[in-house]
Length: 247
Image 1 (spheres, rainbow, N blue to C red):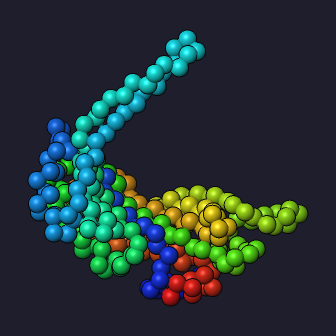
Image 2: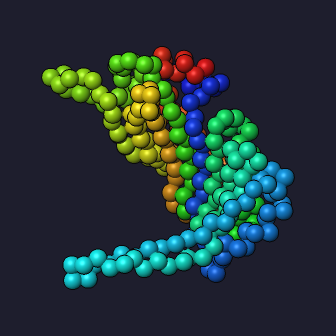
Image 3: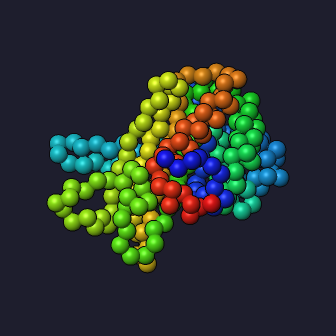
């Protein structure tokens, strides 16, 4: 396994920090609106997020027109001027998305905690039900035929009796760490762009489910533990040759 270390050119296409909550009774998304002035310096753009629910039915073998219900205001997306950092304040939780260029955990993590505290002070949810750290990576391959095992330690295995040229694949596993009571959904997909350039999308969603108090002092420790688990999965899944391309 390659040694975990900082990668100056990490192949991260999106970093996601996610808090799912059980909302207090009667809470409405409009209650986040006053935060606009408080966040305006760093997040000058705000978008409404409304919810819709469509119900489909079949009566006597015939499909009926869908019934669409307006669920009302679900929250707001606060965006930085360049729209690279997005803070989602929703009835069901708080999410921070960071698009390229990725900066660093040391820069983003304090912002996540600051905004979460602002979210929780405003929404006053009953409990947190899920914490997650999700990183989506794009690992390009050089032109021409590629031996997957050169780049991926967890590449799909094709029986030797079959042709070994693979043009696409999709794998998804959920890994549990019972000692730390955390888990991760790990997905890998081989895709090609319009020019024929192949790349693997490597999606690691490390999470902890349960019920946690919104002011639980272990929240930060849990997120750091999820980050460590995510890093372990990342470096365990790639070869040293692949890792070296991003230093």
